[in-house]
Length: 230
Image (cartoon, rainbow, N blue to C red; front, side):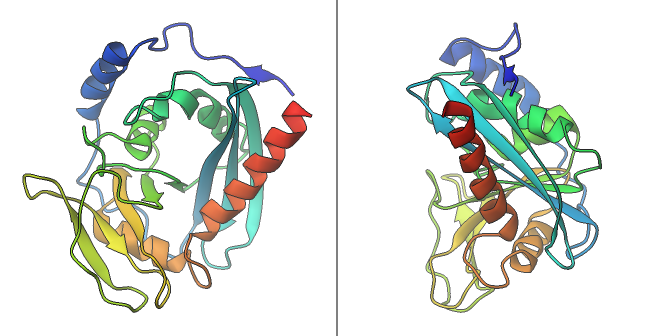
């Protein structure tokens, strides 16, 4: 498998990466609702790392949004493109994620990232970054709230609580996807609204805490990493 190298002009240090985030953040589109839930296609993207070998594997898994059946999948393997710095994780993986998306033969529809969008210290997590670079509608779904807090939410599937920044801005929502299980954390990336994003995640979680898009992409990228580093 071809190894994806980072672009020649890719940021090499923290200050440059933050400057890129600040510039690209101005291009985020927040006034579109996004595609309606349970329609068209939804694509999950995820990555797996082997830091000792400096390798990252990315997977893109396209699901029918109605049946949640897999209709296409693609992988790419690349070099880790940036050091580990909290808040700058997108720079480690985006070149490889974009290569996986580019390998698909159809429009990905809505893209669901295992990560953050607006729920980020500079309001520009992976979902926002990927959305701006690709032009696709993208939402982020994370397993923890990163640096934000929320009130207690109810115990039932569909219960929500706002993720709040220090200034009171709602940057995302804690969303209970199954009765009595820990919530996931949904935030807008690009060309979607928060209400719609939460509705999509509920449609993608008929049985488990995490969206089917994330579960399928996680398995595929782990398998791709094992094959690439064997």
